[in-house]
Length: 265
Image 1 (cartoon, rainbow, N blue to C red):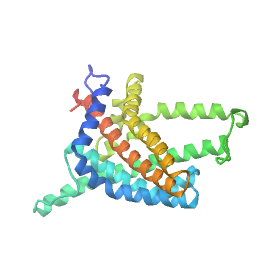
Image 2 (cartoon, helix red, strand yellow; image 1 turned 120 degrees about the horizontal axis):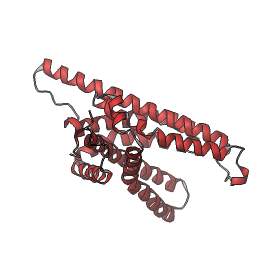
Image 3 (cartoon, rainbow, N blue to C red; image 1 turned 135 degrees about the horizontal axis):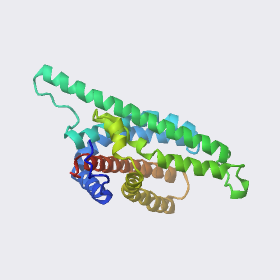
Image 4 (tube, helix red, strand yellow; image 1 turned 90 degrees about the vertical axis):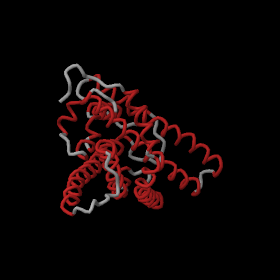
């Protein structure tokens, strides 16, 4: 339960703690991230080869294996932060105890992974539907005058809905730890905590966005807009996105911990 006097969290402290733990666990995370990054690169490369990079619905479907791998990785990382459990599992020699420990992990990792995939599928579907109506031809630039009737209102409504439902995007965290999803959502209830959660996400995400913009401009300057530059951009985006997701997950975990216990650490 949340202490009555604790109705908000320090997003700066949670963000700082997230960056510190990612740096401290960089060697472990490199091993944990390797498989998901390779799978994500393969999926993006396939999408790029098929010309699906601008088709949100098809891109989401192609990325399904990558989403499962990333959900698995984030669920493991969440359990490291909460329980100090590391992957791979190291047997103790006691078969009964080891099987119970493995079952406990599976009951957290599997739901966390599946919910992460479902969240991204729903987001992909929402963006695809809005894009299909507002921008039927993604290959051509669209001026405000060319937008279909009601498209601006639809896009604004989508943004408002995503903001109001923002805390739902992190439900894989309590499920990965076998905690109550309802209590997790209640922890972030209220406009103040919602704004702080959005601010935390921005603080954890901005470096990745900047890295993609600056790095992307540098790559295009060196290689031009050919196939080599496109594939290098994919690699940069995949690396930045994976690291961003790790940092954001850590930030939300520490914010949740502060709301529940009154302490960031």
